[in-house]
Length: 119
Image (cartoon, rainbow, N blue to C red; front, side):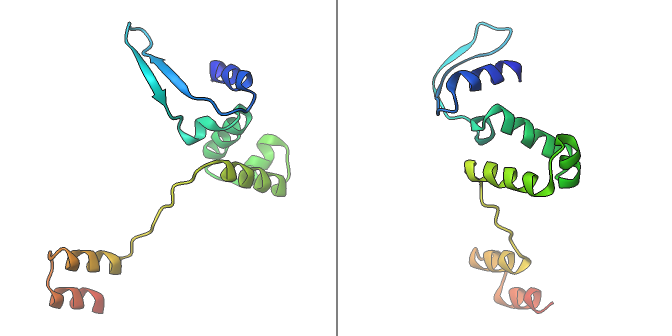
């Protein structure tokens, strides 16, 4: 992450666009405009914070110890980082939803759907 740290310092938290990629250990280069993954758009310090959060398996108590900060500080920093990310909304599909989807696609009969929903 050392070179990435230098890049984020050079950009001064301003948005930037990656226009080239070279595969390490080869002569292959790709030129174009590439959108950064959401985590890569964070400041280096925030990337370190998120990495540690993942390493701690999401334990705020462990984050308090790792960074020597309070619970509210951890929560505030996580909320600030979440606000910077374009989070993907994960939709939980229930068994009921699946039954209706199968019925709509004609993969099960109305009777079978009623039987599954009656459970």
